[in-house]
View 1 (cartoon, rainbow over the protein chains, first blue to last red):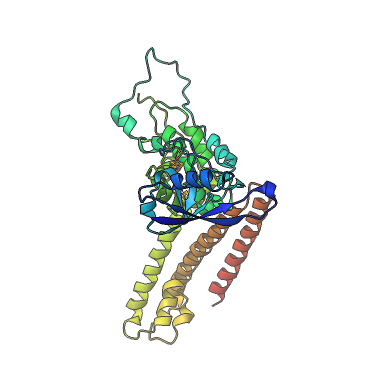
View 2 (spheres, rainbow over the protein chains, first blue to last red):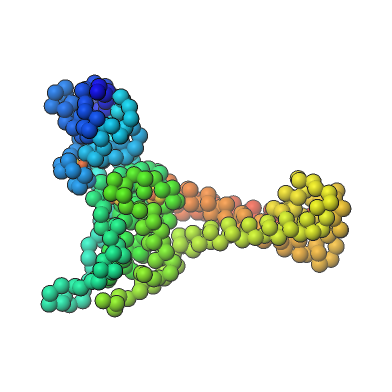
Length: 234
Length: 140
Ligand code: SF4
Ligand code: SF4
Ligand code: FES
């Protein structure tokens, strides 16, 4: 089948304004959007810039807006787009550096602000810090995050203010707050109850829709809100 | 592995206002329900005037319903009761609404003097509306 890709192009060094360019390519229904981008880069225009690494939906580098929705280009098949035109744009809310590449620094700054690592000053046991299967299950969903930023850059609260920590950072905070081996919950909850914490979330659910790992993002945010209110880490 | 210290409940301003928003929403439903039921009980079921009924539900001011056959509620304790009802619903509605304005404003504004300025203006507006509302309730 023949599909036309309408791709956002911007190169600050060219002096040209951001614009869209169209490329028509021959595609299999089972091709991924990433394959088409690679094809265009290889055959039509080598300057087309985008991030990709694993090409298997696990590194989180190729989040982009495809037909208006935040998706991983490597996880989206042409046949699932049901159309002969595919619009590809950079994710929203972050500064575009070139073409589909955005400046992820504000995203990672928010990520770092929630202390995304295990905190436990108690003397380490001989072998390992044990955990029951139930305790592990408690935060299983949020361990799946690949930091692709699909969620945070689909969130209207983040669009208007990049100081909002955003759903991805809250998902990571959740992953540690509810980990029985961790002792930093109080500190993280304090950060998240501030002005740019969980209360900037207005439960719009865009993040849950956007997450390519199918994490129940808004539910995780709700559980963090509940922990702030009740002081319970159940 | 259950020696995990429970975090202290931090009563941050954002948290308290978040809780308040939820509770005041429910309280407003409750107050409106009381107003609605009492309006029916006092006679609205015989003479349904949708406008008066709606006003009685959301702003139970005796002067709103003089044209129905509702007993004269501008007398004595009855009047005091309705004035209190009116003040409560007004207090919750204005506070809920102004807090909503604050939340939207602070979605946009960073942690700078802009936030203090916005909070100041919204606080003054809130006080102003309360004073005007209470004056109207007591004077009518
Ligand atoms: S649920 Fe909250 S975090 Fe998710 S998109 Fe909506 S406002 Fe943003
Ligand atoms: S929660 Fe989902 S959408 Fe958000 S960064 Fe993690 S994997 Fe991506
Ligand atoms: S390239 Fe790694 S997630 Fe798509």
